Image 1 (tube, rainbow, N blue to C red):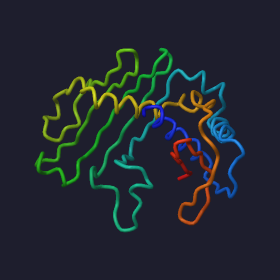
Image 2: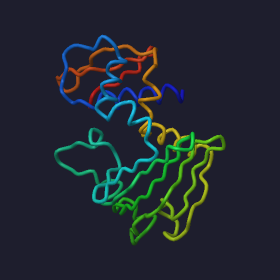
Image 3: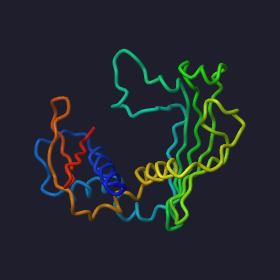
Image 4: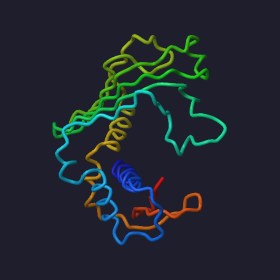
Length: 208
């Protein structure tokens, strides 16, 4: 199941690189992945990456744009504001991710914290042989004191966090480019056709 989830996300990432609608599926899903890799700088430069940081100093979203798109309300149900940096270390033979996040909870969470104190934490996720996820500063629990460090997460949450880190890894497409169990197709989204990759088990990813 883990490999299927990674493949599904990989196809979604590949298909979002070029947002120009295409009306005919590519003859090869590997070509689609190759185009995505080229758009990201090419296999050579991506393979040489030792680290990468995504910075969002003024924008924090609790959901993706397509999940939260609505004309009458903003994406503020979980958090009304915040910022985050997501960093990757790629030179150890395994993936290590660090998430530094600051988020101001919405009024929905007043049951757990009357003051709605901002949540600030740093979380390290490691996929090595003895993989782990550990809060090294602060926590993201609305009912805990803000200065308390949560430390290690349980096994279930660790599995989820490691999987999410792998999905965001800059090396993901490079590792998956030789996958043979996908085919090219098209899907329609809001009346527009987009190229897509279709997994043998009917897992479909489309341009969004």
